[in-house]
Image 1 (cartoon, one colour):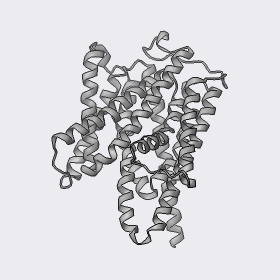
Image 2 (cartoon, one colour):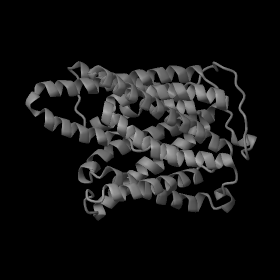
Image 3 (spheres, one colour):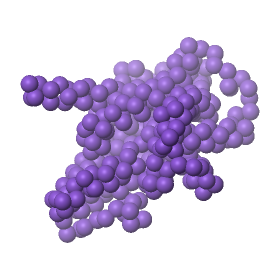
Image 4 (cartoon, helix red, strand yellow):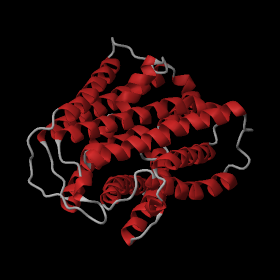
Length: 362
């Protein structure tokens, strides 16, 4: 009977992780469709974050009513900075990179975030690295492989593997669809900026969570400041009122998907998966997203696959697994060294893991 229950739980986690990656993959495709049909790169995140805030705000107010520490001016300043990194820069660079590159390589580049996060945390001495142990060497080699893969994708496009034709949809003109290698390189550079801002957000989020452990409220505040920042940018960049109008069912679908699925369902599902399986187990499934996006982009968007991108994606995935393996081995060794402090270690690791897990996708 016990075995049946364990098997049932494992199946539930696997199905939830598959649905989670499908939701993530769908966001890449939906966002590219939104750009192709002419949705503004500024209007899109404004509507997305507005919907997310309407979902998160009431939930945070009622669920964490008795858990929120008092707000202070330094905390609000840190929330603002978190929003600048995790929402404004993160989403802005992502949309620019997605416009000039492709959903497949946007997903592939995101696999380098754990390695970049490790590199930043090590530079700030928030992460310990022992080069004399296998776990330390694995994390270093994984970081090098991931950054090397991102470099390959950026600098080497390579010959096409398939012959696809780009379809222009909606009110996007043919001139708006990028056509040359220079635009592709800029797209990859923007995606690298997206990964850097995402990694910076996760590193900075960990100490903020220790001061303000109400996670849902923290996410709501950062979402609010991110919305304000995008509105300020829009006041200078998107002054044409016509660009703010939603005129088709496709636009409604893409905006609702980004706001409800990507910023609502994904948060809840990801939190449940981490609670049941742990952050390492969840992160191991990240490369599945790249595979799903590649299939969707080829079938739905008729995107082209390039050999340079495949080589870079393989290096990034290899680096991801090395970093995860090294991190997991390091935690096991720490638990073995101090067996009488397991409960305390578990509480501390949970706090750290919560700080490392993104509450939103780019």
